Image 1 (tube, rainbow over the protein chains, first blue to last red):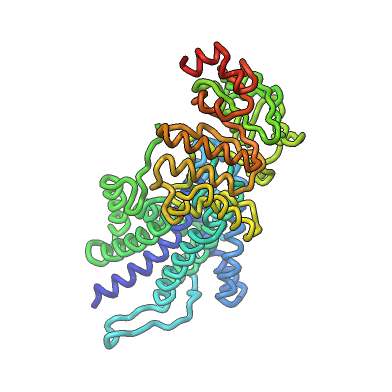
Image 2: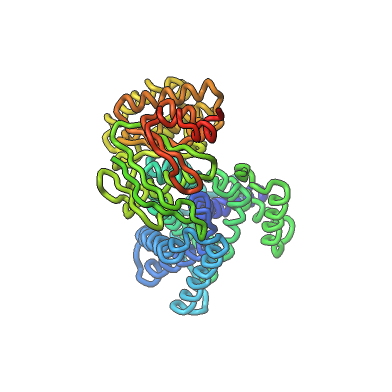
Amino acid sequence: MSFISHLINGISLGSVYAIIALGYTMVYGIAKMLNFAHGDVIMVGGFIIFTFMSTLGLNPIVSVLIAIILCTLLGLTIERIAYKPLRRAPSLAVLITAIGVSYLLQNLALLILGADSKSFSSVISLSSLSLADGRLIISGETLVTIPLCIVIMTTLNIYIRKSKVGRAMIAVSEDKDAAVLMGINVNKTIAITFAIGSSLAAVASALMFSTYPTLSSTAGAMPGIKAFVAAVFGGIGSVPGAMIGGILLGVIEILSRAYISTELGDAIVFLVLIIVLLVKPTGILGKNIQEKV
Amino acid sequence: MLEVKDLQVYYGVIQAIKNVSFKVEEGEIIALIGANGAGKTTILNTITGLIAAKNGEVLYDGVDIQKIPAHKIVSMGLAHVPEGRRVFSQLSVYENLLMGAYTRSDKNEVDASLQHVFKSFPRLEERRKQMAGTLSGGEQQMLAMGRALMSKPKIVLMDEPSMGLSPLLVEEVFGIIQNINKAGTTVLLVEQNAKKALSIAHRAYVMETGNIVLEGYAKDLMNDESVKKAYLGE
């Protein structure tokens, strides 16, 4: 029974990774860049929720909605100020800028909020579910996280495949010049992608900090990197890949913590990345990248 | 309708277009012929704003369109079928056609254009649900042309439509270009297949390493000794 319990916890953690991984994978797919500041947007989201809910005493749902709005604006601002001017720059310049933005956000948070970590109180008030005579307990956070992740993934997939903006995203991700010839505003499409990714980061922060309540200026870095691993694992650029990669990663992490070693949990996650990159460099659902001659 | 004046285009320090001027009148098929690397594609890409020119003007209905963002040019009635077709392989045939009508909002009119394209390219209707990436080269060329027509253009720029196609398909594609023109759309055609291009064009310009070296009526150029020798393989 404890195995099932670990498995459910793994899927729940993996769902959070999947939601964060979406931000990486969509931005990579469309702007062909790795936004390493994405994890820190989660941290900012956590602090916004904390401030409005715990300090100002607002309703949790309202606080999360405010965080979604502010994180979306933050994502748009980062894209406009830091990344848009580099649209035609070499990818290394963009990567270094992204790391710079990441440190900027972390240190701004340190400056404004201080070095001591805050204890985040859960935004989810649902009570836990007790099954099999109390041998299997599923927390309220898990009961919200997993279905919410499925809803987000399904909605996003339908939005990308069926809406005009979504199809424009696919077109831009495949061929920017051809997309321009269709009349698609590439800059606007990239900005929309950042907005979606950042709003999802806010949702992920609410779910993650409700389960793992330690909030500090670097709290977004590790989940950010793991979600990036999940995105690569599933096949970077692929939305269903982010879901599969995220959930697998969450399950691997929780099971290895439970059965192998608590300390080595993170190391095993990164070992998995190395193995995946060696065996299938494009990830589980990744497309074969054909270099044009 | 479209006039290019004293155009100069650079890739870094390399000058791809030295000084090019030409005119396309309404209702014409104009062919731009010349060897690989002469700068034909660069001219089309400069007209639709994918590349910025260093000097010169691109006048469309008398207005210089170089300052207009590239994505706004298609809605002015200027469509571009790029070299190598560039269809969206992860979208279906139908979705590709819809992308062609991206800037149009009237659903009924878009639907009418779709029916019109399906009438001109019956193969596209048969394969409307198929992913564009799985189409044959000829079908992709049809799709690229159909996609451009979905914007209801006044003028279509076509870049090497015959590239990589079998002689039979080349024949078909050039027939379609003539039909598009007969239906009232002006065509600016860039081709390495000079013979075919001259056979359907009204007028033509011959390019060599960034310059226009010859111009005239297509039927005159077809009988020009230097053109025959250099481009028609006679």
